[in-house]
Length: 95
Image 1 (cartoon, helix red, strand yellow):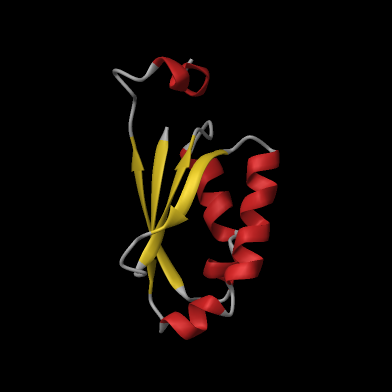
Image 2 (cartoon, one colour; image 1 turned 90 degrees about the horizontal axis):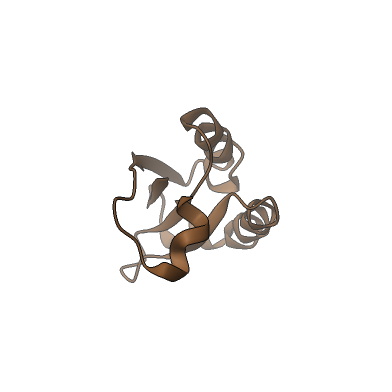
């Protein structure tokens, strides 16, 4: 499982110009069942994606095709982890 931290590198006005394209891209990832959840940070300094992609290569492909990356308005940090415990409702994402 992967946490992808998105950090905006441009003023929020430049980021907002790309938000619609970014969200449309996320919709394609949800349709492919690559994302579990996503959202903006409350500080408006970036966002967070939770993915159950199969590999780091797949995560890199997701990042490299993100409009935020393509328009150079954000940087990414990837945290890979293996859930040790989870809520029952989360079961389908970890097994």
